[in-house]
Amino acid sequence: MTASNPLYQALFAPLSGQDRPLLWLADGRMITAQDFHALLARLANVLLDQGVAPGDRVAVQVSKSPEALALYAATVSVGAVFLPLNTAYTPVEIDYFLGNATPKLFVVDPETAPALAPVAATHGARLLTLSGAGTGSLADLAAAQAPVFNPVSRMGDDLAAILYTSGTTGRSKGAMLSQENLLSNARVLADLWRFGPSDVLLHALPIFHTHGLFVASNVSLLTGGQMIFLPGFDLEQVIAALPRATTMMGVPTFYTRLLDDPRLTRDLVGHTRLFISGSAPLLAETHTAFEARTGQRILERYGMTETNMNTSNPYDGDRRPGTVGHPLPGVELRIIADGAEVAPGEVGVIEVRGPNVFKGYWQMPEKTREELREDGWFITGDLGTRDADGYVTIVGRAKDLVITGGFNVYPKEVEELLDSLPGVLESAVVGLPHPDFGEAVFAVLAREKGAEVDLAQIRAAVAERLAKFKHPKGYAIVDALPRNTMGKVQKAELRKTYGAEFTAPRG
Ligand code: AMP
Image (cartoon, rainbow, N blue to C red; front, top):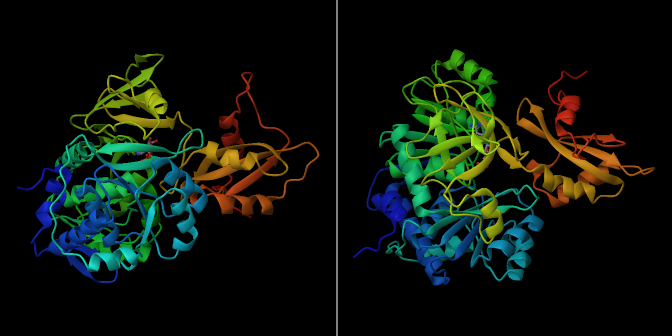
């Protein structure tokens, strides 16, 4: 009898023995459903051989590839917990993740293996390698394995993945996601957005984040569709692939980059039935410009690592620019200010509840209690409003998050590093409007009395410690940060003062 493993059964078992295209790669290769299932089975057998047991974490920091996606599938299938890490993270950052998650296995790119081997050893994780081309020690072990395997039994409530979010205190928190969290959300989205076997999804998102890994891949796998699986957002590759795509999921930057290219026309996307945007606010003007150019109204949705997706604009009804639509079926949403639900149009903190909401933060019960109420409501930290028609609009982030090119940066983490550098008394990091990235990280440094601040030295220290997307794209040096009477740094004032830093015409 086949063991019960809801995600395996819904997403991966149906691929077995199916001689149909599943993944189209940038180099022209095609991977069939059965090839992918065989890869999953070989990798799963390696994991079992390596002693990976149900509940063990398998940490992964590798380039996007079919093998990397199959490793996610294999991990879930052996009942272990998939823990993908942003490829931009430095060894200093990785040290924290491995220390917190104590994975049994850590899979890295062969190129970064020398730098990461000591980190893995410190935390007792075995190290295997996998390159973007599908080579490495993991691939070698997989090649020697049988392409068949029986999934390990798991319940819907068991963990399938831990995805780290940046923490407001500068420390990332591991969001624990169960099989049911992922599966229920994939089912609702597939239904709402009408995904089916004839769909070809243009997949140019990273697969270490909820958007590319769960929203895009799970929905496509669940519904028997195909994916054009690109290593990242390369404008040439995306434009070449669009005529074959029926759907695309992207962050707003994808859409602004496409709009900057005259080759984006109604004809180019004549075959595409649905464009979806999320992970950061899509400017209403981007929505309008995209429609004017292509005749297509981008469907914007809203979600986060901890909750999967929460709201979506309608498939058939009015997709309203600047809004994130209605709560998904089965997801409750309320907007709270001063302990009570606000009236339509008023701003408050968005809270959500439903089968999509995570199980808490890995080994951080007190953080979990702060954000996840006992009765199941999760305090998102996003500020929003809801109009009389029920459309939700995100108006800001209580948590002060900066989203740059779809990546989250918590100012506190960057500030802590800057504050520790020579000549810097204190710092404030804000997100400023940027034409390409949506927001760009900007740092205001208050110098120590009489000290000189050496920006070259600061940039070098930042480059050594932080992932590139967190690096400030601009700096200002001041004598003192503006503060209110409560002693709080007035970031709104900084945003006003430096607001045109990246958007004002130069010269
Ligand atoms: P992450 O956990 O990386 O997915 O980031 C989640 C955060 O991204 C949310 O809490 C929101 O602040 C933001 N976000 C996601 N989708 C949208 C959207 N459509 N509009 C505005 N903000 C969004």
